[in-house]
Image (tube, rainbow, N blue to C red; front, side, top):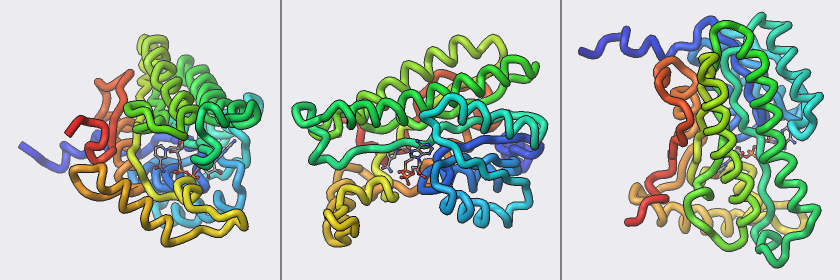
Length: 273
Ligand SMILES: NC(=O)c1ccc[n+]([C@@H]2O[C@H](COP(=O)([O-])OP(=O)(O)OC[C@H]3O[C@@H](n4cnc5c(N)ncnc54)[C@H](O)[C@@H]3O)[C@@H](O)[C@H]2O)c1
């Protein structure tokens, strides 16, 4: 029988969550939903203006927020952000490692990739998630309760696509990091899972239609969205909320028996059909 009690496990009341990449897109949407579910949320990003906008969005949900300007490439800065969560809110239950970058497709073919681009992607997408997991696990291992870590990977892990090989490689690394973290953290009650979204229009995907002067070619952007929607049996691209719902699920006790898993909100694009 379904009752309101069935939804209680989705509540994050009394919990503290930290979200990286919280100034924009999927990170902002995830922070918003976690706050809506009752969590106090620590918002982490390099973009301080975006962080303030996210904090303003969350203000209506009634919980507390803290903004931390930090670069996930830096272990020291990530450690400090996690310390801030514990110092300011007294605990840390959820860490969502969302911050990530990609490269313009025309620079992304293996034969064209420069060492600088390779290093840049690895630094944010792999090391950034690694530092976030490490800092979270150190806190959660000692708290007697464990916690939930949610990493963002990508549907790029399922299907090779010319031009995004390095991005896909970094996202594939997150899958094994997630599984290993699940094995190492399980005995302390730490669940580690990942979300692999399909195409979601955000400032990241707008890069596909960015012109040399920095503006976005809206027609080209729309053409990309239509092409991506065509790949899904649902005939649409994703939304930030489609992904945030998965982050909330994995963060919450509703997913209490889920660990080492990759959840795929991608409209079915990764299955052969
Ligand atoms: N949008 C999609 O189609 C899609 C699909 C699959 C996976 N993803 C992944 O979702 C995540 C979020 O992407 P998005 O689409 O919301 O992009 P976005 O550009 O809107 O958001 C990314 C955020 O990460 C922040 N960031 C970048 N480098 C950082 C650093 N070094 N330190 C701290 N913050 C940093 C940015 O400032 C930005 O706020 C990324 O990991 C991305 O790879 C996105």
